[in-house]
Amino acid sequence: MTGLFERALCFAAERHAGQKRKACDGPYFLHPMEVATIVGTMTDDEETLAAALLHDTVEDAGVTLEEIRALFGKRVSLLVMTETEDKRPDLPEVMTWRIRKEETLGILQSTKDLSVKMMWLGDKLSNVRSFYRLYLREGLDMWKHFNQTDPREQKWYYDSIRDALYELKDTDAYREFTRLTSLLFENVKEE
Image (tube, rainbow, N blue to C red; front, side, top):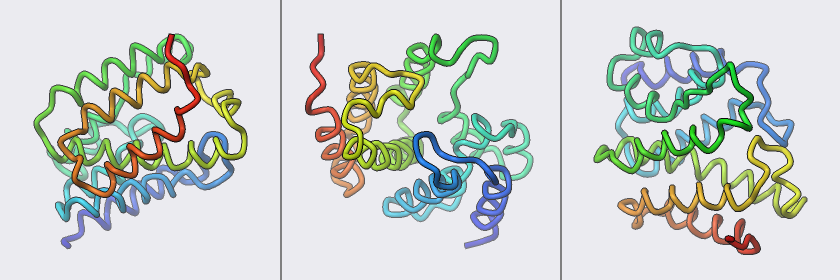
């Protein structure tokens, strides 16, 4: 590899320093590392792997897309943009959850770019792994830790992601994602 992946690794580690993940006390940076590892099972494209490391820096670490573009190039910034929600800082996150998810799902559902899909799969599989560990400890009460506390809404979101990522159905990551979401939401009844 050239230095792109290593530079992204150092940058993301620095920007996420001191952050913790929701509902656990682990260092936040373990999440982008896990995302990049999952994506690395599907591709060796360095820009995609760098974007996997950087995917939450804009949304959660105060970095701008312009900074990502200047430091890592146009392609990496475009990939990061597909994972970045408009948080609407003037409104409570709980009030904007559904619209933010619909907006980003629209990007995922319309893209033909496999790098975008691999990044999404890496991110959401990492999330679902941590959700499932939490579910085993707390059951459906686990959702109290999140902005969207209704498990039916969460199920809608993750089912929509699974459907949009079907093109990756032959990967181990997709099979694991499907299995864990089925287990996570098996007791959630839709209205």
